[in-house]
Length: 316
Image (cartoon, rainbow, N blue to C red; front, side, top):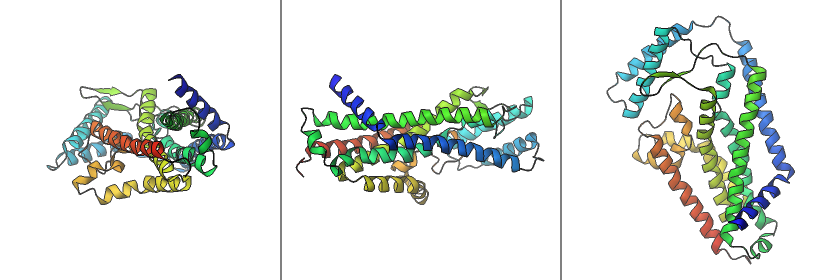
């Protein structure tokens, strides 16, 4: 274990000794600040004569009731809509204004966008951390050390995942600072039905929870890129295939949404934030089922990576 931790430390220091790692971190911060600034600019251009919030909530309540009247509604979707109905009724009965979509609190809570940026950066590292050893010709020296191959590969994989965690936390920190600098505090409240009663949502708890859910996409995509880079020894192929699957995933799910097989495709479950939104392409799935499917794919990706790396001839 001590040797493995030492290998992870060495890989971590090697990663952060590269200029590109710092550039990617800086780009993440600049992108988040830019998006917050753009959102604020768009807000200033909006028509100030906005619809009264009670009218909006009444419309949402009426639409929700229409949806609940549909006999073919899936059980999970019905449960979600019933929760929304109780929240809307509670807001109207107690004159509680919904939280402004452009408030400081809303910006902190809606942290899912951070994962969408982080996944693009982590894929670059995951794709090249093993493949670069082959392209640079350092793999023979690396594997000739008196260290088991699985420990070497594990150190690289752990480094990739830790890099993703660090970028997510950096992105969340930058978004918090940007929210406080650019946006004002909202006057409304974010409410949710917890199964027993309507309660107010914790800004920080919600933000961290959404951040955790969005990390699933980073985790799975990075593992896939890591597998491709390890098997084919090509970082460009790993990056290309990973980003292609990332951007085309929803399209594949929509095309297969009418078929039962869609429930077992990894793309269907990669974005766990769908369980906190009002839209899902595939309705009849649950969070535990999604986690189980993702776990199977992760194990499969890692088995392929380790099997290939352990049996590879270093003279090749």
